[in-house]
Image (cartoon, rainbow, N blue to C red):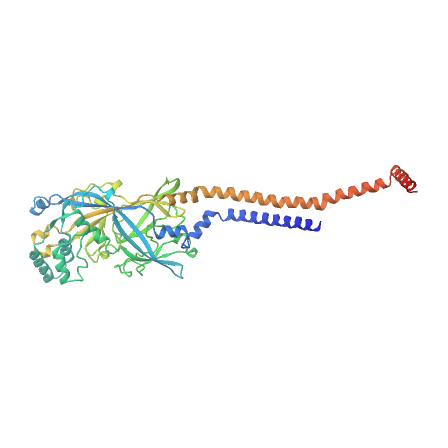
Length: 511
């Protein structure tokens, strides 16, 4: 009997404890929702967890589409019949851009240092253009060095003119599409490199070869709760510097602080803030501004657009202006290409600054085809779709110092080389499903679960309270009532007479 009572008491205490645990858990779940806790934990970027694994080897499908320009009137331009070069766009030539992160190092100051490497994979099934097709293109080596040396002393310029004549270098050359993109070499460039190695860092003027020649960087970003959601994965340094390589921090106020690689943005985005991403291709920070809400994969996303004036001059603080001023719509990128006179713009100068036919004819600017934007899920900062487009151009300075009429035809010309589009075409299925579960299913499911645990916990506690009330009040009352009934029966005269008669009969039988 004693063991049974102890067991009953132990069971009662256990149910009360479980009731308290369930109620406490449900209250904690309402105060700290699971989605908030998951986002808070994501700040740590712990290896082995899905956010870290997806970032380390991004599963995103990023297509790189290259568009190049074939010159259709080079003979007429050189002969003076046409005042401007006419271009014909050829493309796209499609590649898959892969991004790898490795050499991860977690630093004591809540930062993460890693190596980011980008490279291209040709996609034969996505291409319809024959890479062996020949086109007429500007001799980038010849025109580039002429422009680079435009303000050099007379003897240097005269020496280079001798090299041009020696190699019989032409202003326009015939190349296959593959050569123009990847293997665009010129004898005069080889000779120039032997004479002045510091002036010619590369002998390959292929458009994509130049862009991807040095696309491996050491990046340090902020992680951990101490930085909060707003600073999550924002760049602190690239190659050990807090500013873009080549720019003097004493004269250029722009730093990498607040920018990202564009793979992840900070969490809990708002509509009134801008996003910054750093793309080495354009050698500057690119701001994105909120445009509208949309729905993608069943979740709410924000669209941020790259403003049309992003390549314009900024009075007093423009790090991307050159000694000889550039017009609005064109930004100097030479510091990211070893001083070679490269400039960036929107494709086809679609913003109208400068007007599309200022330098060449044949452009067909289209905001739909040539603008840049990104769709971002605001809670996680995960880009669901992104399109970045930019045009590479060769800036040719005033060549009148060479005292050659043919050279002067190219003076002060912005010569388009080609333009490229980076297109993140959605998210992999597993990322989409996880995003939908976290944002759409988990919040109401958590409310249901925590409501049920609260009800069950309350039931267990109330049940034990009721059982204890029975033991302490009702059960003693019943026992007392039974005792009183027995006492009253003992005082009953009929009962006493029958009891005495029964006892007398029993005694007689014994005799």
